[in-house]
Image 1 (cartoon, rainbow, N blue to C red):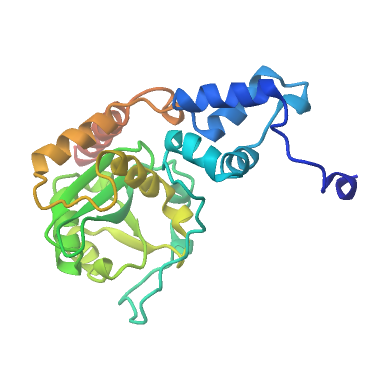
Image 2 (tube, one colour; image 1 turned 135 degrees about the vertical axis):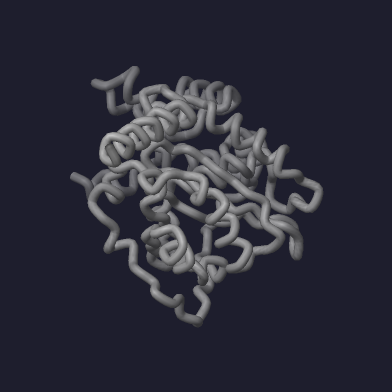
Amino acid sequence: ARAARCHLPRKMTTDWQVDYVRERLRRGWAPQAISGRLAREHPDDPGRQVCPETLYAWIYATPARAKELAQYLPRAHRRRRKRPGRRVHSSKIDRRVSIRHRPEGCQARTEFGHWEADSVIGARGGKAIHTEVETTTRMHAASIVAAVTSKAAVQAQKALFGALPPGARRSVTMDNGSEFHHHYELADDLGMATFFADPYSACQHGSNEHFNGVLRRYLPKGTSFDDLTQAELDDIVQEINNRPPGVLGWATPTEAFHTQLESTQATTRCTSN
């Protein structure tokens, strides 16, 4: 049956589908949201359901349609691009521990205090932004760094994590970028475990990748960060942290983080007593 269906024309051939999708794209809906809503509204009618991949393929099927509709997509690319993996540097990371050795509570996002780190690059040769996301509460943090270097990244991490109690800074997961070569200083100075994702596997630190994408809506690629102040960046991050995602039951990351932080501090006081 699948063989018989595999060469059938794609969906999006009826006027109601086209009108439905165009209207919601213009209202800022992502293809995933459109697909999910169609499935919710027509659970017993597969003919009215469209998967996100079909929507992307339809949008980019012709240059004219891509020019009209791609501007409403989260990344607003005129062309659908195959994203090549970065060339992983040949140097080895000292004391590197694979993501596959993370504790179960970290993997399942059930234990507070596990973070994901990455960098957002500004205009060539200028300042950059170091980003962190706590995986349970989706709390975001960002710091301007002078350059994408190991020294700058670990200093930004020490400034952030040093202000937190041990229960709120159990571990951090990073990619294999050269800016994280001094990760072992977090273990030596703060007692934090550090883990590294597999090469070309951005999905393994997806919360941070999502945060970077949202941050890019404020600071598009090619933007110079040289004139950006930390106070301005803090305002952006605060606005993001005060949006309620469904994964938190519509609580904001700020609310969820402070609830967990208070619980951790209370537990620490009881233990010490």
